[in-house]
Image (spheres, rainbow, N blue to C red):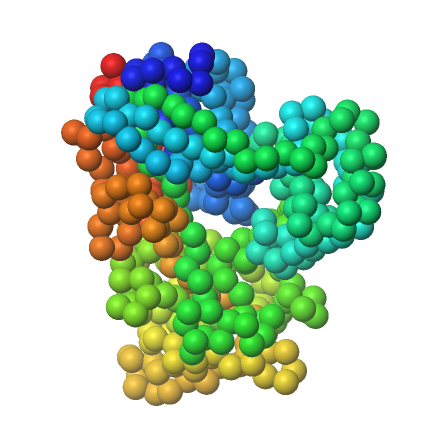
Length: 417
């Protein structure tokens, strides 16, 4: 397979579970596929989860199988740390310009860890949302694919950079690595660029930065994950205390004309899933869920019901007005219970903001001429060879992302001939 492959090839932009699925489905029916991802690893948000629906599987459950399929398929060429910079041509005959950022670690890397041992500088771990620190040269996370280190060069002194380079027995550290631009010719493009958690600092009343006792739902996933910053023990960031009470703030940024107008769909289900994490570790902990509406459609209704019967889980129908830090490390969540008309000020040890799903492509997509709806989700244009998949298309769960990506692959292989 050449880097130019031709008009029968398919470009998949985004290497999360949606992009992996679309790429594999297209390649396994005989198409040449280019898979590009801006992170240093494939797997996207699913790799950061502790468990995902519908079977509460760990991320290894789906990702390891797909990584094996990817390695065994010669029709797929993948590029990490790569973004699309321009698109020209016409449907069925696109010329796409891309740029790969320097990783400073080349393909000689065996992930032996010698460079990491030689590094003294640390940085906040982006994979764990900054809840711990990691070496400036590291494997992005324990199941990273490709299994190759990445270097935050700007975080290191010249002395440390030389020590890292000298420590590598495979000549894999390449400190003068430069960005690489290249061009692909493809017949169709699948946009599977996924989502980002909505920035909690934008909701000033929730005071996210005022206390380490206020976290997001994705941070909660990392706390509960065995490969997370606390090896799976749910502890309060900052003082590492074991929480005795929890509050979930639903629709943190979603369904709000000042933030995200859409419903992020998975937030309610994610909260009940995270309640199951808490119950496994703290059976008697008090849990409060502040919600506008509870949306757990179809097969998820039964999952919700068992937690609604839990005597130590209190559901409060009301939009949270504020979250305030207390001197003892706890926080107070204030809301009006719309069913009783009473104002509630509930003190808890840990507050989890169910932040919404914001489409990740954003302004970059508009600059490339990608059609988007008012919420920033990609709108498929099959007649132009542009297909949306997974959470780039709408806010959905992992299972639905897989279905969407298979459908996108079917459309793309019909266009790229």
